[in-house]
Image (cartoon, rainbow over all chains, first blue to last red; front, side, top):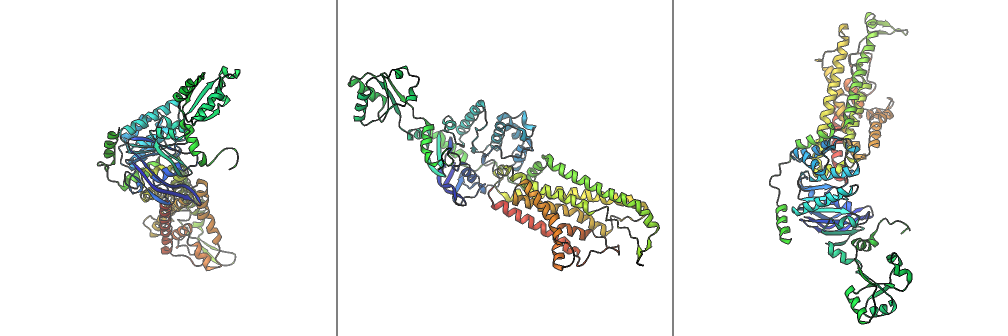
Length: 317
Length: 296
């Protein structure tokens, strides 16, 4: 379990982490989401005591991590796959870590085997691809068999097989009762990995809840209705309290009926599909199509963090 | 699910019963593996050591060409009428200044490398995540660094001294290893290298960047003293005596040649040893403080 209490980190007059209070629970994979520059990596460094907080506190399983003389049996961390000296071999790197924490040297072979680097273990790390470095970083995190694991953007550079493997491993680690805290700037990466989400933007906490709770936060489900009597139906639905807009043309670009113009599309927010069907039936309006568009997590994430995007492309802010 | 989570929490939250006691020597082993597994370390040290021994022995070899002539005619009357009696300085070539500067440079580079190698690559975050108590890591780095540089510099000094004396032994101008002057010179020649390694480590810890650290430590050890040359002002000479290179010269100076002097306001041996010790202590203390205080 990781507990952040009113955690704040300032660099000069820039606040990277702003009064963050979060509890990351054990036994579950917690996704840590935020746009680029939102303070995710800084938060992870604060957890590990690599950076000192300006104010507030953070504990891992009840103790500040910096109170531990040796860390690998308490927290395994992959912060940046590049945080490694390229001149050594993977074996030498892991051996140096293992001896410092009195971890038996057989663990080096075991974790290299586990991450699929057994063959490349004696080669210089400088020659590794990003994906191989990610695997090596994961091997280092697993070395001490710790109850708490932190991973900063672990899926970067991994091939699809590697992504699947990492996800299954995270879920297995969580099932074993460990705390697994995984950061990402892509919602799609977390969608099939995490059970809970901690979302931050500009160092502020935006959300701390389960994945399904989070998905409900985004825009409500939109129902797409297609009918020859669009105007009549729109009036009825509006009277029932729904927000009705003409459906965007591109959402039905492949629909033949659209070209005829006799089946206008409506995007309805605020009424569920069965209710719309019932209302249409009662008013003798024929429906050509009635479909609920699932609110995507990605969309929820984009909407929630829109105000907190630090580095937006395009026009100057 | 909730019951499973609860049991899991209690399982993982108890202090780990079988965690071994942390030991300092484990950190030294970690640092030793790190140093030993980098080719660049060995390359720098072995090239510096080989070049140092070569320069020293080659210097003695070139002396021998003139030695027999000088020994045959030891007394000469110079044009201005002064009488000059030849005295062979057995330390000047065998433990030469230019060669020890090479070892100082090698030591400083290795010392800087132990720090910037961690900080410039980000390796330091991996290291401190494994060992959150940073003081122990720095202490282990210092132990390993000083051990390697001291052993290597001692071997270099011994080979240079004994080799050089053996080459002039048939002329009976060599110095015995039991001579106190020889022992002080060898000790000075050896210990200046770990002192420079510690200074290099200090610059590496302060600057953290590879090129800038090396440039800064070279400028400090070899360029800065050049600004305090000459013997016009006493304070200038006294500032010069504070640099390790100057202290090494003071300790290795051969006092039995009446025609050579150390110039005005020479420093004593105690002063020179204190300069060595002072730089070692300053480097260790400052490196320890900056590594502990600054974000990794």
